[in-house]
Structure formats: C-alpha cells, structure tokens
Image (tube, rainbow, N blue to C red):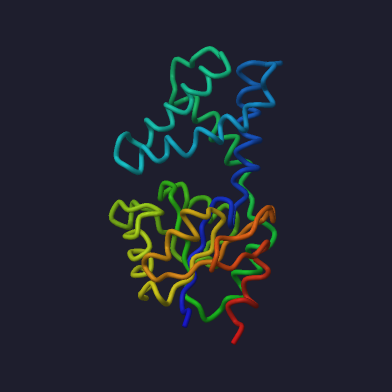
Length: 229
C-alpha cells in the first residue's frame, strides 16, 4: 500500500528548464550583445549542470565552486570575456532565473487531490534554494517537507541511502512510498533497489518508460493512478 508520495522538484513541479533557458539567454545577451551563438547558450548551459552538480554532490567542490566552474566553462565555450568576479556573474544569472520560477499548471491541483497521503519533495538541489522555490511557486503547505542531501546525511539521488532516508523523513518504509519525477535514473529506476515504487513523469511523451514502471504525461493523471483499487 502506498501511504506517501515524494515529488522531484525541477522539471516535475517547477518548470526549471524554461526558467534556466530564458535566464542564461538574457545573461549572455547582457554580456555579449548580438553574440552569434546566443541561441546555443541554453543547451550549453543545460549540459554543464549535471557534471558540475555531480561534483558538488560527491564532495569534490563546494556549492559556490560548482557555480564558478559552470560560468568559466560557458564563457570559454562562447569566447566571452571571463568575469573578474565569478560569484557576482552567477548571481546575475540567478536573478534572471528566479524571475522565471513558475509551477507547472498541473502541480497545485494534483497535490491538492492527494489528501490522505504523506507528501514531500525529494530534490538534488541546495536546501535553502529549493525551499525558496517551493514558496515562490505557491506550493508551500501543499507539497510537504523539502528534502535534499543537506538534510538526508549527504546522500543525493540516485544513491539508495537517499531514498531510504527520504522515506524515513516521512515516517514510512520505502515500500510504502512512491516517487514521481522526470529523470529516469534518479526518479524512476534508482528508487527500485530500496523497494520504493516510482512513476515517470514524461511531459514530452517522447519514449516508453523502462519495463515495469508506469508513465504519466501530466500530474493530472497521478491522483487517479494512486487512488485506483
């Protein structure tokens, strides 16, 4: 029986990609007006997220340093003058990014329809920022506690310990928790080793889910799925 539901945040409840793409485009345009590769900036920036965030998760660098590395790498790729103050440069991007924070239209209604379940947000971001996002998009009080590696003993998805710690934070064993998210490795197949069940949120509807895992294309489909006998 499912008694708790964990949601990924970026790409699941919050439209991270749209906010980040718009923000980095604005950031590059400010620093290099008319840059011939402005249209490439969103894809380049997105490709830099995962490896540098993974280095932070692994303890290879600080949160602030992974941000600096991303700015350095993007400027090098686009041949933009390297900022003297990398922290201030990233802060400029972050200001644009915050202005783009919005919940997906299906998020609030789906959460409100899940009364009776213990809810939570399981995300690989930084605790303070992810909590700020949930408040900014109007889901505070609906989504449950925000759980990151900073409050889960330094464990991040897809480490098995992350899922068991998140379930424990809801006061439940993993077998009674369902994880819903858009990343197959982190949100779908990763939890399975702990006995936690999962649903793949495939908003683009581009391909079938891994064998044995259900797929939905909107959070509106989640309440009927979990309430089904």
